[in-house]
Amino acid sequence: MLGQIKSRSLLAQVLAVNLLLVAGTVLVATVAVDAHLERLFRGREALIFGLAILATLLGNWLLLRRRFEPLDRMISSMEQVDLAAPAHETGPVRSESAEVERLNAAFRRMIARLETERREAGRAAIRAQERERRRIAQDLHDEVNQALTAVSLRLQASIEQAPPDLRHELTETKRLSSQAMEELLTLARQLRPALLDDHGLLPALHSQVRDFGDQTRIQATFSTRGTVPKLTPEQQLAIYRVTQESLSNIAQHAQAHSVNVELSFIGRTVLRISDDGCGFVTARAGGLGLSGMRERALLAGGRLSIWSSPTGGTRVELTIP
Image: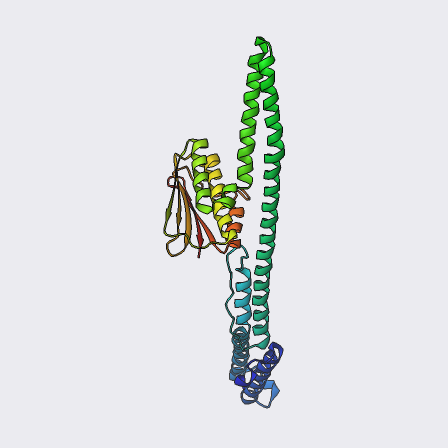
C-alpha cells in the first residue's frame, strides 16, 4: 500500500500513514488486551499495551520523518542560495510527494528568473553608468578644458604686458592653470578610456599600467600570454575596469613597491593583478570597490577571485571562460 501512495498529495500520504498506524494499534491492542477491562493496567497486559503505544509513536515518527525529509533538504537548499554567486543552480530534490517536486521545480524556475532579471538590471545599470561617464568626460574635455585653455592664453598675454613685479605671480597662476588642465584631462581619460574605443583592449591596458607607474612611482609591468580571442565589449570593459579599480586600490591602500598585471589567453581569458604590498585580511563593507568589481565580472560571464595576506601582498584574478 505504501507503494501506491507515491506522487500523491502530502495530505493523502499523512492520512494514509496514520490510518495504517491506527489499524495496527487496534490490532495489537485487540490481541494484547483481555476482554475484561479491569485487567487492562495489570501485569503483562499493561506492559504489552505500553510497548504497543511506544512502537506506534516510533513508527509514526520514522514514517513521517521520511516523508518530510525532502522538505528539509529543500529548505536547506533555499537557505544556501546566494544570488551574488555566479550561475547558482539548485539541484533537484527527489521526493515521493508531488507537491514537493512541484515546489522544488517552481523554486528553481524562480531562481533562474531572478538571476536573469538581476543580470539584465545590472547590465542596464552599467550601460547607464558608462553613458554618464562618457558624457561627463566629453564635457570636461570640450567645455572645462577649453575654458582653462582660454584662461592660460589670457594669462600668457597678461604676463607679456605686466610689470616685472607681477610677472612672477601671473606665471605661477598660469602654471596652476596648466596643472589643473592636465588633471582634468587625466580624469576624463579615467572616466571614459578613449584608447579602449579607438585602439582596443591591449593598448588601453598598456597605457593604463604605464600611467599608473608614472603617477605613483610604483614599478608596474604589463604582460600578455597567448593570442587574443574575440571578446565582447562587455568583457573588454570588465577587464579594463577591474584593472583600473585594482590599481587604484593598490595606490591608496597597498603600500606596494611593485605591481604585475598579466593577461593570459591560454585556454581561457585570465587577468591577474599582483602586488607586494601589505594586503588586507577583511575588507570593510562596500570598501575597496570589491563589490563593483565582482558585479562587473558576473555581468561579463566571469568570476572574480581575490587572495590577500599581510605578508604576501594581494592577487586579484578575473577569469572569463
